[in-house]
Each structure stands twice: as structure tokens, then as C-alpha cells.
Image: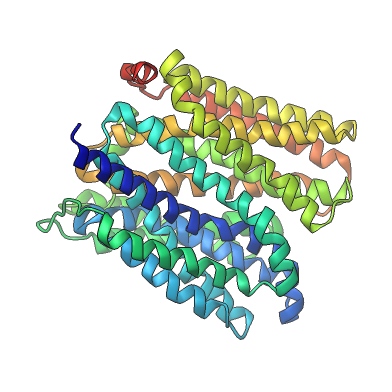
Length: 457
């Protein structure tokens, strides 16, 4: 490898790491500050929750679209434009005068920021060989996980002292820095001017996902007979049917349907969805458990919750070394098996009111997913041609977000509005069931034998 290529790869990795940190760090702070925001605006908790819900739905809808835009028009352009817009919108969000404007501006700012995630993975996939990707994707995943922890530890006390609006000001600083650093360092990526963006497919995908995710998200609180839930579910179903019909007819579809019939692609994205359903779904479960059963206050709940991404970051950083020694399939199995055990530990911790067992459960959940995630992301990128790596990463993120919504709905339905131990004791084993499904699906992933060579480099 020549020195110029080595410097360019190192520069791209550093820029993307700063970028994903800027995207992920404010989420935990905003979630922790929701009660304070509700008090400031004198708004209902159910309405304030949309400060977190709306960006999550928008994220899942947009990921394949932004990934495809990067494939067609250049990932460097999408990356820099996304952070430039996120900088401006974050500053405007800090001055939001009411709940409605806060939700809209927060969603737009976060959407611009997260639009860069598929391009981040795609640029690295284009620069690194398949057998080098587990290590690189592990580093990026570790940054995604550890930045919310740093936000809680260092930003939490500051925000608590000076107010929640400063979260958005703090978010704009690394976003602006990323733009300034990225412009001279990021190389141009290939473009495809001969292919048009599939607008009808994008519209149908937006209708399908927005309807289905809204129905899933509100199912537990509003029930199956609520008009909004019914209308959203119908919109999602009709949008899905329309999407399949459109993608079969257009010359250059947004989502090439044959891709979803390939095991090399379908197995990892399905594993991502199942893994996220238990991992993300158990996060609010743990928060409620610590507050209602163990009596922790907001900052204490946040610090306990930080164990999960902290363990995730550690496992992501070492996953490639483990895969190099024993193979990706074994690491995938070990990671998902650890998430299965985390649910059982949580259930025992609830029944015996054991804080150490609960803390061990939280850490095991993060460690297991962190161990398995780099292999999943690597498999997704290895399953497609270089021209489609942005789309592949977007679809992978989309499946992860869908799984997160489903898992959160299922697990919170177990506890409902009760503070009794029984609901929690049933919810935690449910995460083990989801982990078993992810374990089974993960064993279908096609891991390259060259993964083992990394340890000898």
C-alpha cells in the first residue's frame, strides 16, 4: 500500500468517526431531558415523546433513500451537505418557540445528520478491502455507541444546570467542525449520472414505512381499535403493495427486489432487525425498571443505561480480533448467545431485586450486540457491488430501526402502566427469545474465510 492511499484512508476514517459521533451523542441527552421539556412547554408527555419518536420514524424512512442518493451522486456530497444543513437546523432548533416547531425542527436536523450514516459506511467500504472491513466497521460502531455515553457523563450535568436548549447548540459545534474538516480531506466517490433516482419508489417506501412504524409505535398506548392506528396500518400495507408493484416495473428501482432473495444480503439485514428489537427495546425497559423498582433518579437512570452502549463499544472494538482467531460465524454465535443470557439475567435480577444482576444484564446486552454487529455490517457490504454499498447500508439501518420499533412496542406492552415485578420478569425473557431468533438468523450469514487472516497482519 502506498503512503498516499494510507493517509487518505486514515483521514476518511477519522472524519467519519467525528461525524457519526456528532449524530449520535445528543439522543441520550434529549431523551433524559423530555420531562423538563414537557414542563417548560406545559405539554402532555404523550406529545413531548414525539421529540424522540418523529426523528426515529424519519430515520428509518430516509436511510435507503440517502444511501441511494450517495451511490448516484457521490457520498462525499451527501456527507458534507448533510452536516452543513444539520448545523444550521440544530441552531434554529435551540430557539424553538413551541412544541410543534421543536418536533419539526428536531426531526429535520436529525434527519440531515443521520443522512450521512450510509455514506460514512459506504466511503469506508469503497476504500477498504472486504477482509479489512470488520475492523473498520467495528471502530465506527464503537464510536456510535460510546458517544451517547460521553454525552451522558460529561454533558448531562451541564444540560441539567443550564437547560435543554443547549443540547442543540452543542450538537451544532461538531457538525460544523465535520464540514470544515471533511471538505479538504474526503475524496470524491464514483457517481452514476446515467441512472435516475426512483421517485415513485421513494414515495411508496415513505408511505409504507411511515404508516407501519406509526401503527407499531402507537399500538401499545392507543390499542388496535384506535382510528389513527388503523389508518396508519392500512396506509402502510397499501404503501408496501404499491412499492412492490412499482419496483417490479421501473428500470432502476430504489430497492432492487432480487437483492432481497439473496441469502448473502437477506440474512444479515434480518439479523440486524432482530438484534435491534431486543437491544433497543430493552433500553426503555431498563430505564423504567431502575426508576420504578430501584428508585433511581434521572441522572442515575442515565448512568445505568450508559452501561449498555459502553459495553457495546468495547465489544465492537475487539470483534474483528475475535473473528480473525475463531471465525466470524463463531463470533456471531457468541454475541447473540450473550444477548440471550442477558435477558435471563435481567429476569432473575427482577425477581430477586438484585441490582448486580440487573447491571450485569445491561452490560451483557450491550457486549453481545457489540460483538455481533461488525460482522453483520461487513456481510451486508460484502453482499453487494461497489455501486450499491450506500443503498445496502441504508437498507440495513432501515431494518434495524423497524426492529427497534417492534421490540420497544412488544417489551413495553409487558409492563404497561404497572410497576409490579411480574411485567418486567416476563419482558426480559422476551429479549432472550428475540436473541434466539437473531442467533438462528445470524448463523445463515456467509462469513468470508479471509476474516481469520486479520490476526496475522
